[in-house]
Image 1: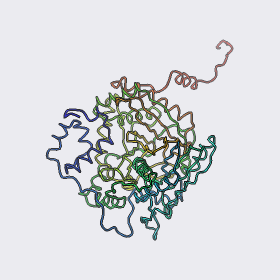
Image 2 (image 1 turned 90 degrees about the horizontal axis):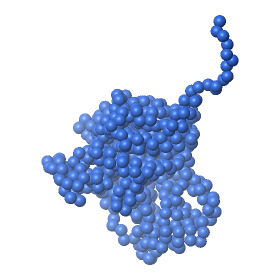
Image 3 (image 1 turned 30 degrees about the vertical axis):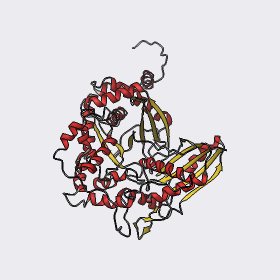
Image 4 (image 1 turned 60 degrees about the vertical axis):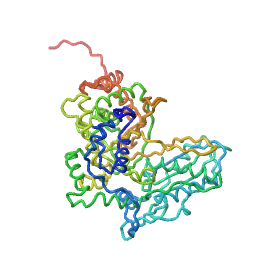
Amino acid sequence: AGADDDFFALGGHSLLATRLAARLRTVLDVEIEVRTVFEHPTPAALAAALDGAGTARARLERVAHRPDPMPLSPAQRRLWFLHRFEGPSATYNVPLVLRLDGPLDTDALTRALTDVVERHESLRTVFPDTGGVPGQRVLDAAGADLDLTPRDVAPDLLDAVLSAETAYAFDVSAERPVRARMLRLGDDSHVLVLLVHHIAGDGWSLAPLARDLGTAYRARVAGEEPAWAGLPVQYADYTLWQRELLGDEEDPSGTAARQLEFWRTALAGLPDLLDLPLDRPRPAVATHRGDAFAFPVDAATHRALADLARSRGCSLFMVLQAALAVLLRAHGAGEDVPLGTPVAGRTDEALDDLVGFFVNTLVLRTDLSGDPTFDEVLDRVREFDLAAYAHQDVPFERLVDALDPERAQNRHPLFQTMLVLQNQAGASVDLPGLTVTEQPVRTGISKFDLTFTFTERRDEEGRPAGLDGHLEFATDLFAPPTAHALAARLTRLLGALAAAPDRPVRTVGVLTADERTALVRSGHGPARTVRARTVP
Protein backbone atom coordinates (compact mmCIF):
# COMPACT_ATOMS: atom_id res chain seq x y z
CA ALA A 1 0.00 0.00 0.00
CA GLY A 2 1.18 3.50 -0.80
CA ALA A 3 1.26 6.48 1.53
CA ASP A 4 -1.98 7.83 0.11
CA ASP A 5 -3.93 4.57 -0.28
CA ASP A 6 -7.21 4.52 1.63
CA PHE A 7 -7.44 1.84 4.34
CA PHE A 8 -11.15 1.25 3.70
CA ALA A 9 -10.84 1.27 -0.09
CA LEU A 10 -8.39 -1.63 0.33
CA GLY A 11 -10.99 -3.65 2.24
CA GLY A 12 -10.52 -2.31 5.76
CA HIS A 13 -13.36 -2.43 8.27
CA SER A 14 -14.01 -1.82 11.96
CA LEU A 15 -12.41 -5.06 13.16
CA LEU A 16 -9.26 -4.49 11.11
CA ALA A 17 -9.17 -0.89 12.32
CA THR A 18 -9.23 -2.20 15.91
CA ARG A 19 -6.40 -4.62 15.15
CA LEU A 20 -4.42 -1.88 13.41
CA ALA A 21 -4.79 0.31 16.49
CA ALA A 22 -3.58 -2.57 18.69
CA ARG A 23 -0.59 -3.11 16.39
CA LEU A 24 0.37 0.56 16.47
CA ARG A 25 0.16 0.57 20.28
CA THR A 26 2.62 -2.31 20.39
CA VAL A 27 5.06 -1.09 17.75
CA LEU A 28 5.00 2.67 18.38
CA ASP A 29 3.97 2.72 22.06
CA VAL A 30 1.32 5.35 21.34
CA GLU A 31 -2.34 5.43 22.32
CA ILE A 32 -4.68 5.42 19.34
CA GLU A 33 -8.45 5.10 18.98
CA VAL A 34 -10.36 3.41 16.17
CA ARG A 35 -11.87 6.81 15.38
CA THR A 36 -8.41 8.05 14.41
CA VAL A 37 -8.15 5.35 11.73
CA PHE A 38 -11.57 6.30 10.32
CA GLU A 39 -10.76 10.00 10.24
CA HIS A 40 -7.22 9.53 8.87
CA PRO A 41 -7.52 6.45 6.61
CA THR A 42 -4.26 6.81 4.64
CA PRO A 43 -0.78 5.99 6.02
CA ALA A 44 0.35 9.58 5.47
CA ALA A 45 -2.65 11.09 7.25
CA LEU A 46 -2.45 8.56 10.08
CA ALA A 47 1.25 9.24 10.63
CA ALA A 48 0.53 12.95 10.90
CA ALA A 49 -2.34 12.30 13.33
CA LEU A 50 -0.10 10.19 15.57
CA ASP A 51 2.52 12.90 15.84
CA GLY A 52 2.42 13.91 19.48
CA ALA A 53 0.03 11.11 20.53
CA GLY A 54 0.14 10.03 24.15
CA THR A 55 1.90 6.96 25.49
CA ALA A 56 0.06 3.68 25.03
CA ARG A 57 -1.72 2.09 27.96
CA ALA A 58 -0.10 -0.78 29.84
CA ARG A 59 0.51 -3.85 27.72
CA LEU A 60 -0.99 -7.22 28.49
CA GLU A 61 1.69 -9.52 29.90
CA ARG A 62 1.84 -12.83 31.72
CA VAL A 63 1.28 -12.50 35.48
CA ALA A 64 3.96 -14.08 37.66
CA HIS A 65 1.72 -14.76 40.66
CA ARG A 66 -2.01 -15.30 40.34
CA PRO A 67 -4.37 -14.65 43.24
CA ASP A 68 -6.24 -17.52 44.85
CA PRO A 69 -9.11 -17.72 44.20
CA MET A 70 -8.66 -16.43 40.68
CA PRO A 71 -11.46 -13.95 39.81
CA LEU A 72 -13.66 -14.18 36.73
CA SER A 73 -13.96 -11.53 34.06
CA PRO A 74 -17.24 -9.54 34.16
CA ALA A 75 -18.53 -11.41 31.10
CA GLN A 76 -17.73 -14.76 32.72
CA ARG A 77 -19.41 -13.70 35.96
CA ARG A 78 -22.65 -12.99 34.10
CA LEU A 79 -22.68 -16.47 32.54
CA TRP A 80 -21.70 -18.03 35.86
CA PHE A 81 -24.65 -16.41 37.65
CA LEU A 82 -27.01 -17.44 34.85
CA HIS A 83 -25.71 -21.00 35.21
CA ARG A 84 -26.14 -20.88 38.97
CA PHE A 85 -29.73 -19.65 38.95
CA GLU A 86 -31.05 -21.26 35.76
CA GLY A 87 -29.00 -24.46 35.75
CA PRO A 88 -27.02 -25.96 32.83
CA SER A 89 -28.23 -24.77 29.43
CA ALA A 90 -27.25 -25.11 25.79
CA THR A 91 -28.08 -21.45 25.10
CA TYR A 92 -24.45 -20.38 25.39
CA ASN A 93 -22.77 -23.17 23.45
CA VAL A 94 -20.36 -22.29 20.64
CA PRO A 95 -20.29 -25.21 18.16
CA LEU A 96 -17.69 -26.02 15.52
CA VAL A 97 -19.03 -28.84 13.34
CA LEU A 98 -16.75 -30.10 10.57
CA ARG A 99 -17.33 -32.60 7.76
CA LEU A 100 -14.18 -34.71 7.25
CA ASP A 101 -13.91 -36.62 3.97
CA GLY A 102 -10.95 -38.92 3.45
CA PRO A 103 -8.87 -41.37 5.51
CA LEU A 104 -9.08 -40.16 9.11
CA ASP A 105 -6.55 -40.98 11.84
CA THR A 106 -8.86 -40.85 14.86
CA ASP A 107 -6.09 -41.48 17.39
CA ALA A 108 -4.02 -38.62 15.97
CA LEU A 109 -7.04 -36.31 16.03
CA THR A 110 -7.77 -37.21 19.66
CA ARG A 111 -4.19 -36.42 20.64
CA ALA A 112 -4.34 -33.19 18.62
CA LEU A 113 -7.49 -32.07 20.43
CA THR A 114 -5.82 -32.83 23.75
CA ASP A 115 -2.85 -30.73 22.63
CA VAL A 116 -5.18 -27.80 21.89
CA VAL A 117 -6.92 -28.10 25.26
CA GLU A 118 -3.51 -28.21 26.94
CA ARG A 119 -2.40 -25.10 25.01
CA HIS A 120 -5.42 -22.96 25.96
CA GLU A 121 -6.13 -22.84 29.70
CA SER A 122 -9.65 -21.54 29.13
CA LEU A 123 -10.65 -24.91 27.65
CA ARG A 124 -9.70 -26.73 30.86
CA THR A 125 -10.94 -24.25 33.45
CA VAL A 126 -13.84 -24.91 35.80
CA PHE A 127 -15.72 -22.32 37.82
CA PRO A 128 -16.56 -23.68 41.29
CA ASP A 129 -18.82 -21.94 43.78
CA THR A 130 -17.02 -21.11 47.02
CA GLY A 131 -19.52 -19.68 49.46
CA GLY A 132 -21.45 -17.96 46.69
CA VAL A 133 -18.29 -16.48 45.16
CA PRO A 134 -17.15 -17.82 41.77
CA GLY A 135 -13.53 -18.60 41.04
CA GLN A 136 -11.44 -20.08 38.25
CA ARG A 137 -9.59 -23.35 38.65
CA VAL A 138 -7.32 -24.54 35.83
CA LEU A 139 -7.18 -28.33 35.47
CA ASP A 140 -5.11 -30.62 33.28
CA ALA A 141 -6.18 -31.56 29.77
CA ALA A 142 -6.37 -35.29 30.40
CA GLY A 143 -9.87 -35.15 31.87
CA ALA A 144 -11.47 -33.31 28.95
CA ASP A 145 -14.43 -35.12 27.37
CA LEU A 146 -12.90 -35.80 23.95
CA ASP A 147 -14.47 -39.13 22.98
CA LEU A 148 -13.90 -39.61 19.25
CA THR A 149 -15.12 -43.19 19.13
CA PRO A 150 -17.04 -43.09 15.83
CA ARG A 151 -20.81 -43.33 16.10
CA ASP A 152 -22.56 -44.55 12.95
CA VAL A 153 -25.27 -42.18 11.74
CA ALA A 154 -27.47 -42.48 8.68
CA PRO A 155 -27.08 -39.37 6.48
CA ASP A 156 -30.81 -38.64 6.59
CA LEU A 157 -30.65 -38.52 10.40
CA LEU A 158 -27.58 -36.29 10.58
CA ASP A 159 -29.43 -33.00 11.17
CA ALA A 160 -31.39 -34.42 14.10
CA VAL A 161 -28.28 -35.98 15.66
CA LEU A 162 -26.32 -32.73 15.29
CA SER A 163 -29.12 -30.76 16.93
CA ALA A 164 -29.04 -33.16 19.86
CA GLU A 165 -25.24 -33.14 20.17
CA THR A 166 -24.98 -29.34 20.11
CA ALA A 167 -27.73 -29.10 22.74
CA TYR A 168 -25.45 -30.64 25.38
CA ALA A 169 -25.62 -28.68 28.65
CA PHE A 170 -22.29 -28.11 30.42
CA ASP A 171 -21.98 -27.93 34.20
CA VAL A 172 -19.33 -25.20 34.18
CA SER A 173 -18.85 -25.42 37.95
CA ALA A 174 -17.27 -28.88 37.68
CA GLU A 175 -16.91 -29.81 34.00
CA ARG A 176 -14.26 -28.65 31.54
CA PRO A 177 -16.09 -26.43 29.04
CA VAL A 178 -15.15 -28.38 25.91
CA ARG A 179 -16.58 -31.56 24.42
CA ALA A 180 -15.91 -33.53 21.22
CA ARG A 181 -17.78 -36.32 19.46
CA MET A 182 -17.27 -38.12 16.13
CA LEU A 183 -20.07 -39.22 13.82
CA ARG A 184 -19.44 -41.66 10.95
CA LEU A 185 -21.48 -41.38 7.75
CA GLY A 186 -19.39 -43.88 5.79
CA ASP A 187 -15.95 -45.49 5.61
CA ASP A 188 -14.18 -42.23 4.75
CA SER A 189 -16.82 -39.71 5.74
CA HIS A 190 -17.04 -38.34 9.28
CA VAL A 191 -18.42 -35.33 11.14
CA LEU A 192 -16.52 -33.83 14.08
CA VAL A 193 -18.72 -32.08 16.64
CA LEU A 194 -16.62 -29.76 18.80
CA LEU A 195 -18.53 -27.86 21.45
CA VAL A 196 -17.17 -25.01 23.60
CA HIS A 197 -19.15 -23.22 26.29
CA HIS A 198 -19.23 -19.45 25.79
CA ILE A 199 -17.65 -18.93 29.23
CA ALA A 200 -14.46 -20.39 27.72
CA GLY A 201 -14.54 -19.07 24.17
CA ASP A 202 -16.37 -16.79 21.76
CA GLY A 203 -17.02 -16.94 18.03
CA TRP A 204 -13.72 -15.22 17.25
CA SER A 205 -11.94 -17.97 19.22
CA LEU A 206 -12.88 -20.59 16.64
CA ALA A 207 -10.29 -19.29 14.16
CA PRO A 208 -7.20 -19.73 16.41
CA LEU A 209 -8.67 -22.98 17.75
CA ALA A 210 -9.03 -24.32 14.21
CA ARG A 211 -5.50 -23.24 13.24
CA ASP A 212 -4.02 -24.93 16.30
CA LEU A 213 -6.01 -28.11 15.66
CA GLY A 214 -4.62 -28.29 12.13
CA THR A 215 -1.05 -27.76 13.37
CA ALA A 216 -1.40 -30.40 16.08
CA TYR A 217 -3.05 -33.00 13.81
CA ARG A 218 -0.35 -32.58 11.17
CA ALA A 219 2.29 -33.21 13.83
CA ARG A 220 0.50 -36.17 15.44
CA VAL A 221 -0.06 -37.90 12.09
CA ALA A 222 3.71 -37.67 11.61
CA GLY A 223 4.30 -39.15 15.07
CA GLU A 224 5.55 -35.85 16.51
CA GLU A 225 4.44 -33.27 19.03
CA PRO A 226 3.23 -29.90 17.71
CA ALA A 227 6.10 -27.42 17.45
CA TRP A 228 4.16 -24.22 17.94
CA ALA A 229 5.38 -21.04 19.60
CA GLY A 230 4.17 -20.56 23.16
CA LEU A 231 1.26 -18.25 23.80
CA PRO A 232 2.36 -14.94 25.37
CA VAL A 233 -0.56 -14.91 27.84
CA GLN A 234 -3.48 -16.99 29.06
CA TYR A 235 -7.05 -15.94 29.80
CA ALA A 236 -6.35 -15.54 33.52
CA ASP A 237 -3.69 -12.94 32.65
CA TYR A 238 -6.27 -11.07 30.57
CA THR A 239 -8.76 -11.10 33.45
CA LEU A 240 -6.28 -9.42 35.79
CA TRP A 241 -5.11 -6.96 33.10
CA GLN A 242 -8.71 -5.99 32.32
CA ARG A 243 -9.40 -5.27 35.99
CA GLU A 244 -6.29 -3.08 36.16
CA LEU A 245 -7.16 -1.34 32.88
CA LEU A 246 -10.71 -0.47 33.94
CA GLY A 247 -9.80 0.62 37.45
CA ASP A 248 -12.23 1.59 40.17
CA GLU A 249 -15.60 2.90 39.01
CA GLU A 250 -15.53 5.34 41.95
CA ASP A 251 -12.33 6.96 40.63
CA PRO A 252 -13.48 9.66 38.16
CA SER A 253 -10.10 9.58 36.41
CA GLY A 254 -10.25 5.82 35.83
CA THR A 255 -11.13 4.20 32.51
CA ALA A 256 -14.31 2.55 33.81
CA ALA A 257 -15.69 5.75 35.34
CA ARG A 258 -14.94 7.86 32.26
CA GLN A 259 -16.41 5.35 29.84
CA LEU A 260 -19.49 4.70 31.96
CA GLU A 261 -20.15 8.44 32.07
CA PHE A 262 -20.09 8.48 28.27
CA TRP A 263 -22.61 5.64 28.10
CA ARG A 264 -24.92 7.23 30.68
CA THR A 265 -25.19 10.28 28.44
CA ALA A 266 -25.25 8.39 25.14
CA LEU A 267 -28.04 6.03 26.21
CA ALA A 268 -30.10 8.40 28.35
CA GLY A 269 -33.81 7.89 27.70
CA LEU A 270 -33.27 4.74 25.65
CA PRO A 271 -36.52 2.84 25.05
CA ASP A 272 -36.76 -0.33 27.13
CA LEU A 273 -38.39 -2.30 24.33
CA LEU A 274 -38.72 -1.95 20.56
CA ASP A 275 -42.42 -1.89 19.77
CA LEU A 276 -42.48 -4.33 16.87
CA PRO A 277 -45.63 -6.18 15.79
CA LEU A 278 -45.43 -9.74 17.13
CA ASP A 279 -47.26 -12.83 15.94
CA ARG A 280 -47.50 -14.18 19.47
CA PRO A 281 -47.62 -12.49 22.89
CA ARG A 282 -44.27 -12.17 24.62
CA PRO A 283 -44.04 -14.93 27.27
CA ALA A 284 -43.41 -14.10 30.92
CA VAL A 285 -39.98 -15.76 30.71
CA ALA A 286 -37.90 -16.00 27.53
CA THR A 287 -37.34 -19.60 26.43
CA HIS A 288 -34.71 -18.73 23.79
CA ARG A 289 -36.35 -21.15 21.37
CA GLY A 290 -35.56 -20.06 17.86
CA ASP A 291 -35.17 -20.83 14.20
CA ALA A 292 -33.00 -19.42 11.44
CA PHE A 293 -32.63 -19.21 7.68
CA ALA A 294 -30.28 -17.77 5.07
CA PHE A 295 -31.02 -15.05 2.53
CA PRO A 296 -28.78 -13.47 -0.14
CA VAL A 297 -27.83 -9.91 -1.02
CA ASP A 298 -26.58 -9.77 -4.60
CA ALA A 299 -23.17 -8.53 -5.72
CA ALA A 300 -24.52 -5.35 -7.34
CA THR A 301 -26.19 -4.26 -4.11
CA HIS A 302 -23.08 -5.20 -2.10
CA ARG A 303 -20.94 -3.03 -4.39
CA ALA A 304 -23.39 -0.13 -4.14
CA LEU A 305 -23.40 -0.37 -0.34
CA ALA A 306 -19.59 -0.49 -0.22
CA ASP A 307 -19.34 2.53 -2.54
CA LEU A 308 -21.82 4.44 -0.38
CA ALA A 309 -19.84 3.60 2.76
CA ARG A 310 -16.62 4.95 1.23
CA SER A 311 -18.30 8.11 0.00
CA ARG A 312 -19.63 8.86 3.51
CA GLY A 313 -16.41 7.92 5.33
CA CYS A 314 -18.06 5.08 7.19
CA SER A 315 -17.96 1.28 7.23
CA LEU A 316 -20.23 -1.24 5.55
CA PHE A 317 -21.47 -2.22 9.00
CA MET A 318 -22.66 1.35 9.61
CA VAL A 319 -24.62 1.27 6.34
CA LEU A 320 -26.26 -2.01 7.35
CA GLN A 321 -27.05 -0.62 10.81
CA ALA A 322 -28.68 2.49 9.37
CA ALA A 323 -30.74 0.44 6.90
CA LEU A 324 -31.89 -2.02 9.57
CA ALA A 325 -32.97 0.88 11.80
CA VAL A 326 -34.99 2.33 8.91
CA LEU A 327 -36.65 -1.07 8.39
CA LEU A 328 -37.53 -1.44 12.07
CA ARG A 329 -38.96 2.08 12.22
CA ALA A 330 -41.17 1.21 9.26
CA HIS A 331 -42.49 -1.68 11.36
CA GLY A 332 -43.35 0.46 14.37
CA ALA A 333 -40.08 0.64 16.32
CA GLY A 334 -40.13 4.43 16.53
CA GLU A 335 -37.44 7.00 15.80
CA ASP A 336 -35.01 5.88 18.52
CA VAL A 337 -33.67 2.45 17.56
CA PRO A 338 -31.10 0.64 19.75
CA LEU A 339 -29.27 -2.32 18.24
CA GLY A 340 -26.71 -4.59 19.83
CA THR A 341 -23.52 -5.68 18.11
CA PRO A 342 -20.53 -7.75 19.20
CA VAL A 343 -17.00 -6.37 19.17
CA ALA A 344 -14.04 -8.72 19.34
CA GLY A 345 -12.64 -7.17 22.53
CA ARG A 346 -9.11 -8.19 21.48
CA THR A 347 -7.64 -4.74 21.92
CA ASP A 348 -4.14 -6.06 22.66
CA GLU A 349 -2.08 -8.05 20.16
CA ALA A 350 -1.30 -10.69 22.78
CA LEU A 351 -4.91 -11.89 22.46
CA ASP A 352 -4.91 -12.52 18.71
CA ASP A 353 -4.18 -16.27 18.94
CA LEU A 354 -5.88 -17.05 22.24
CA VAL A 355 -9.11 -18.95 22.87
CA GLY A 356 -11.23 -17.12 25.43
CA PHE A 357 -14.33 -15.05 26.15
CA PHE A 358 -13.18 -11.60 25.01
CA VAL A 359 -16.17 -10.47 22.96
CA ASN A 360 -18.05 -7.46 24.27
CA THR A 361 -21.46 -6.11 23.28
CA LEU A 362 -22.04 -2.50 22.29
CA VAL A 363 -25.42 -0.77 22.25
CA LEU A 364 -25.61 1.36 19.10
CA ARG A 365 -28.36 3.97 19.03
CA THR A 366 -29.76 5.19 15.71
CA ASP A 367 -31.53 8.55 15.68
CA LEU A 368 -34.21 8.76 12.98
CA SER A 369 -35.94 11.88 14.31
CA GLY A 370 -36.92 14.72 12.01
CA ASP A 371 -37.11 13.93 8.32
CA PRO A 372 -33.57 12.74 7.53
CA THR A 373 -32.23 11.48 4.25
CA PHE A 374 -30.30 8.23 4.34
CA ASP A 375 -27.07 10.22 3.95
CA GLU A 376 -27.98 12.15 7.10
CA VAL A 377 -28.81 8.94 8.96
CA LEU A 378 -25.40 7.57 7.98
CA ASP A 379 -23.69 10.68 9.34
CA ARG A 380 -25.53 10.25 12.66
CA VAL A 381 -24.68 6.54 12.80
CA ARG A 382 -21.02 7.21 12.04
CA GLU A 383 -20.73 9.81 14.78
CA PHE A 384 -22.38 7.60 17.41
CA ASP A 385 -20.54 4.41 16.44
CA LEU A 386 -17.06 5.97 16.43
CA ALA A 387 -17.69 7.36 19.90
CA ALA A 388 -18.96 3.94 21.00
CA TYR A 389 -15.83 2.20 19.68
CA ALA A 390 -13.73 4.63 21.71
CA HIS A 391 -15.58 3.52 24.85
CA GLN A 392 -15.78 -0.22 24.19
CA ASP A 393 -13.65 -1.35 27.15
CA VAL A 394 -16.51 -1.26 29.65
CA PRO A 395 -18.05 -4.75 29.75
CA PHE A 396 -21.71 -4.88 28.80
CA GLU A 397 -22.48 -6.43 32.18
CA ARG A 398 -21.10 -3.37 34.01
CA LEU A 399 -23.00 -1.09 31.66
CA VAL A 400 -26.30 -2.78 32.50
CA ASP A 401 -25.55 -2.53 36.22
CA ALA A 402 -24.68 1.17 35.91
CA LEU A 403 -27.69 2.15 33.78
CA ASP A 404 -30.03 -0.13 35.74
CA PRO A 405 -32.77 -0.38 33.10
CA GLU A 406 -36.10 -1.93 33.94
CA ARG A 407 -35.38 -5.66 34.18
CA ALA A 408 -37.64 -8.37 32.81
CA GLN A 409 -37.12 -12.09 32.32
CA ASN A 410 -38.76 -12.01 28.92
CA ARG A 411 -36.50 -9.56 27.12
CA HIS A 412 -32.85 -8.64 26.79
CA PRO A 413 -31.82 -5.42 28.55
CA LEU A 414 -31.09 -2.28 26.48
CA PHE A 415 -31.71 -3.94 23.10
CA GLN A 416 -33.54 -6.93 21.64
CA THR A 417 -32.23 -6.94 18.05
CA MET A 418 -28.64 -7.86 17.25
CA LEU A 419 -26.71 -6.96 14.09
CA VAL A 420 -23.52 -8.79 13.12
CA LEU A 421 -21.19 -8.30 10.14
CA GLN A 422 -18.69 -11.12 9.83
CA ASN A 423 -15.58 -10.11 7.95
CA GLN A 424 -12.91 -11.78 10.08
CA ALA A 425 -11.12 -14.95 9.00
CA GLY A 426 -13.34 -17.98 9.34
CA ALA A 427 -12.59 -21.13 11.30
CA SER A 428 -10.95 -23.03 8.43
CA VAL A 429 -9.10 -26.22 9.38
CA ASP A 430 -6.31 -27.74 7.29
CA LEU A 431 -6.02 -31.45 8.13
CA PRO A 432 -3.59 -33.39 5.89
CA GLY A 433 -5.25 -36.03 3.73
CA LEU A 434 -8.76 -34.75 4.50
CA THR A 435 -11.22 -32.46 2.80
CA VAL A 436 -12.68 -30.31 5.57
CA THR A 437 -15.90 -28.32 5.22
CA GLU A 438 -18.03 -26.62 7.83
CA GLN A 439 -21.25 -28.55 8.44
CA PRO A 440 -24.39 -26.44 8.97
CA VAL A 441 -26.30 -27.16 12.16
CA ARG A 442 -29.68 -25.97 13.42
CA THR A 443 -29.39 -25.26 17.12
CA GLY A 444 -33.03 -24.25 17.65
CA ILE A 445 -31.83 -21.34 19.81
CA SER A 446 -32.25 -17.57 19.53
CA LYS A 447 -30.55 -15.47 22.21
CA PHE A 448 -32.37 -12.31 21.07
CA ASP A 449 -35.69 -11.44 19.46
CA LEU A 450 -33.94 -10.98 16.11
CA THR A 451 -30.33 -11.45 15.05
CA PHE A 452 -29.33 -10.29 11.57
CA THR A 453 -25.92 -11.62 10.49
CA PHE A 454 -24.15 -10.74 7.25
CA THR A 455 -21.00 -12.34 5.86
CA GLU A 456 -19.08 -10.61 3.09
CA ARG A 457 -18.04 -12.47 -0.05
CA ARG A 458 -15.24 -11.20 -2.26
CA ASP A 459 -14.16 -12.22 -5.76
CA GLU A 460 -10.59 -13.15 -6.75
CA GLU A 461 -9.68 -9.49 -7.10
CA GLY A 462 -11.09 -8.59 -3.69
CA ARG A 463 -14.18 -6.84 -5.01
CA PRO A 464 -17.58 -7.15 -3.29
CA ALA A 465 -19.30 -10.31 -4.55
CA GLY A 466 -22.43 -10.38 -2.40
CA LEU A 467 -23.53 -10.74 1.20
CA ASP A 468 -24.71 -13.95 2.82
CA GLY A 469 -27.53 -12.92 5.13
CA HIS A 470 -28.75 -15.01 8.06
CA LEU A 471 -31.72 -14.23 10.29
CA GLU A 472 -32.16 -15.95 13.65
CA PHE A 473 -35.52 -15.24 15.29
CA ALA A 474 -37.34 -16.10 18.50
CA THR A 475 -40.14 -18.50 17.63
CA ASP A 476 -42.00 -17.50 20.79
CA LEU A 477 -42.57 -14.12 19.11
CA PHE A 478 -42.38 -14.47 15.34
CA ALA A 479 -43.88 -16.93 12.88
CA PRO A 480 -41.59 -18.00 10.00
CA PRO A 481 -43.51 -16.03 7.32
CA THR A 482 -43.04 -12.82 9.31
CA ALA A 483 -39.30 -13.43 9.70
CA HIS A 484 -38.91 -14.23 6.00
CA ALA A 485 -40.83 -11.07 5.10
CA LEU A 486 -38.51 -8.96 7.29
CA ALA A 487 -35.43 -10.37 5.55
CA ALA A 488 -36.92 -9.83 2.09
CA ARG A 489 -37.89 -6.26 2.93
CA LEU A 490 -34.44 -5.49 4.30
CA THR A 491 -32.85 -6.85 1.12
CA ARG A 492 -35.04 -4.60 -1.04
CA LEU A 493 -34.47 -1.65 1.26
CA LEU A 494 -30.68 -2.01 1.02
CA GLY A 495 -30.85 -1.67 -2.75
CA ALA A 496 -33.27 1.26 -2.65
CA LEU A 497 -31.30 3.21 -0.04
CA ALA A 498 -27.98 2.66 -1.82
CA ALA A 499 -29.51 3.85 -5.10
CA ALA A 500 -30.95 7.07 -3.64
CA PRO A 501 -29.28 7.97 -0.34
CA ASP A 502 -30.32 11.62 -0.73
CA ARG A 503 -34.02 10.75 -0.39
CA PRO A 504 -35.80 11.12 2.95
CA VAL A 505 -35.96 7.64 4.41
CA ARG A 506 -39.71 7.99 5.10
CA THR A 507 -40.29 8.02 1.33
CA VAL A 508 -38.51 4.72 0.72
CA GLY A 509 -41.11 1.97 0.82
CA VAL A 510 -40.38 -1.44 2.30
CA LEU A 511 -43.41 -3.30 0.92
CA THR A 512 -43.77 -4.93 -2.48
CA ALA A 513 -46.70 -4.01 -4.72
CA ASP A 514 -48.43 -7.27 -3.79
CA GLU A 515 -47.94 -6.56 -0.08
CA ARG A 516 -49.39 -3.06 -0.46
CA THR A 517 -52.40 -4.44 -2.33
CA ALA A 518 -52.97 -7.09 0.33
CA LEU A 519 -52.68 -4.44 3.05
CA VAL A 520 -55.27 -2.23 1.38
CA ARG A 521 -57.63 -5.16 0.96
CA SER A 522 -57.24 -6.16 4.59
CA GLY A 523 -58.44 -2.70 5.60
CA HIS A 524 -61.79 -3.18 3.91
CA GLY A 525 -64.66 -5.44 4.82
CA PRO A 526 -66.11 -7.95 2.36
CA ALA A 527 -67.86 -6.50 -0.71
CA ARG A 528 -71.65 -6.78 -0.48
CA THR A 529 -74.38 -6.20 -3.03
CA VAL A 530 -76.86 -3.62 -1.69
CA ARG A 531 -80.37 -3.30 -3.14
CA ALA A 532 -81.12 0.18 -4.39
CA ARG A 533 -83.55 2.10 -2.22
CA THR A 534 -85.08 5.55 -2.29
CA VAL A 535 -84.04 7.71 0.61
CA PRO A 536 -87.16 9.10 2.29
